[in-house]
Amino acid sequence: MARLIAERADALPGLAEAFREHGYAGASLSVIGTATGLGRGSLYHFFPGGKREMAEAVLANIAAWFETAVFAPLSEAEDPRTGIDAMMVAIDRYFQSGRRACLIGAWGLGATRNPFAAPIAGYFQRWIAVLKDALQRGGVAEDHATTLAQDVVGGIQGAITLSRALDDPGLFRATLGRLTARLYTALAAA
Image 1 (tube, rainbow, N blue to C red):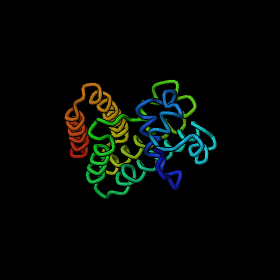
Image 2: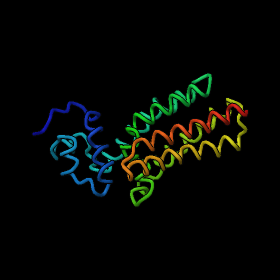
Image 3: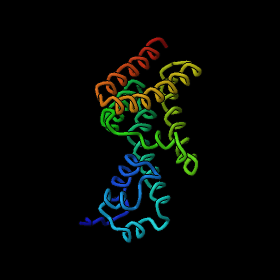
């Protein structure tokens, strides 16, 4: 039974989960309809550009969430540790302690990357840049801050994959703890 969705934004969580679990190519309109509770006509009403427009809307929604929940706290915190703590808590919640796949990370690996290369690259570039800036505000040298930010974002992405593959959310949380300790150590040494 189709559910009532009044606005396009109401469909985005279901769309994201369909794309996250089935990939772009595997998320057929049938899968998307089941995930959103919308029929084909309603999907095209909200997304006249079809599946590509749906994917673009999901990517924009994810980027907006990260901007608010991760990037802004890192950018705005007077003490970089406060921003780092906020980032790690938000990341743990968003990825459900490693039980939820990173849609942007997964799409960045395969053929799906090509049509969405700019937002995929922008997501990772923004995350690395904001974390690097927070570390530099804390006194970490630019080269070290860049490397550390890349390692931390890469470590989070790897932990998502490994936690899901092993069905071990404890591994994800332990990795976040080790990454946080690395960031704190760099800040303390600065």
